[in-house]
Length: 514
Image (cartoon, rainbow, N blue to C red):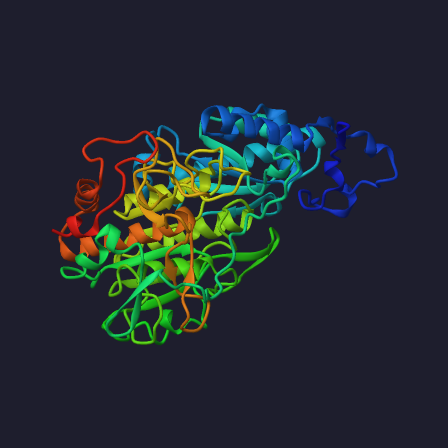
């Protein structure tokens, strides 16, 4: 691809500039067109190649690895919205104490103001025109220390990266085109499907009052654990694609059969639209993935012949933070971050389940993870589910973070990852979720009706683990997060050792509730 050139004429960019009076406006037909910025824009495929190579070599990519021109080019290839993480002067160890930060404290306000003012100074000095602060600063989070600006100028990138009070700068909406690096093979990043499966013979056992227990539950001691705990009194917060309003077992029939006295809530933090106009899109699942995950963790033990969840007496808060399973779009990063803060601030939520992720880090979402973790939440995240386009990659983000518990799926009777599952040194637990011989997957609830669906990958492994954690915590309601996690480790196959690909191995819920 021929290298493109971008001519950034800031004087003509109304999104950045506002003049103090009409006399200051330049006639675009005069010599003002000489005030331009001519820079070679690094082709998108070159930036993608850098990212892919870093992932292949190190299982990690961070935007700080790029030079100024590469980062600026990535910004231009996206929507030019820049996320800027900041800190107050003299502050350190921000990640460890992010929950104690008050961004409205004068020192933090000053830091944020300094960043915006420095950006204005650079642009006004360079282009000899006034910049309206409100046109420049698009968003400032009211809890987490980051702001977002519409940036078109390379010099601003360089200046921001040199400021001591800037923790990170990242393009909000840049997405990697993996197809180019997979021999042209197309792929879908949605993970959206949740239709009833009418071919489930041999995949369940019918239990009272009339529920279908998935074939893999007995192999992990889940049905035995129910003699001691069913998750009562514990609330699981699930950040995913939402919960279907048409699945009664996650709505009006949430309390049915042996499931009683609990609550279900549906929330939405995902927004649609462009940066200048966004609106919330509601809690309804339009993908199917979130509904199936909610069913795995908390579906009732009812009498309608549907699938029963692991913690069938736990409460559920289903948050639609994303439109599909990959946190790669700007709106998805916004929605997931907001969901993490929302659930982090709810004292009743003990567990957060995230069967979603992306192949490389996003610092804004990471701030949200650390915030929820700092509030005492036990956060489970999927190690990764994909076909060949990223199956070479190890544990994805945010499961790769120290603040999360990474989960993946393995085949029945052997320590071999499922056909679409990721593995690696950062995996903490595994769940049996692919049947030997048939490669069949566990049961869940479909988008509507009483006929179960089936679901695979590290997604179902993560939701299953969140359900097991609820069983343990319900059995020991006075325990801390670390005590619950330790008990789960002790129940797993390899404890006290760790396997290089599968962590502590398969969980045993029955052992964990003893």
